[in-house]
Image (cartoon, rainbow, N blue to C red; front, side, top):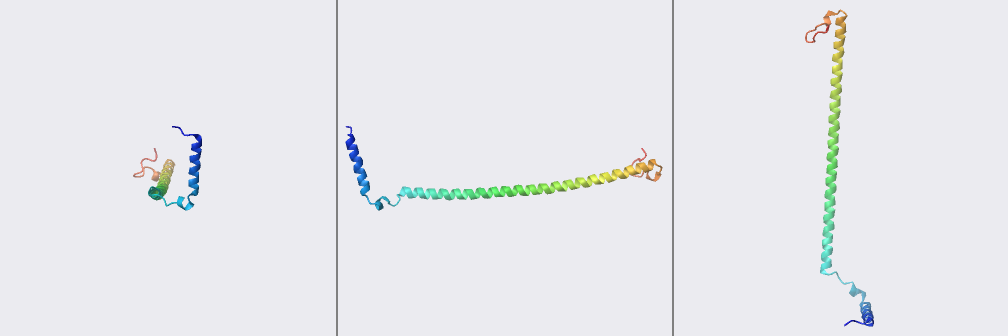
Length: 124
């Protein structure tokens, strides 16, 4: 059987009166077991999230430090290579200049600088 709208209003008004008559302290009851369990789980999740965040930050820092060390090592090795390459080029230039001077001297008649042992033929 369907309720009349007046009955519905009466029941709603009765419910409102009952709620209004209950003291505020009674409404602020201690949390139920389910609520305290949820709060505990939430706190545990927050603690795990903070620990994971700290772990992630530590791994990021370690990776950044590794990249910085690798870059510094690369730069040092590159500098050493460039220095050795420049020294080799300087030695090669000095040797070629001496050889060219020997060839010119030989062609100009200084036979002491022609066909020196271990140098090859300067007059050719």
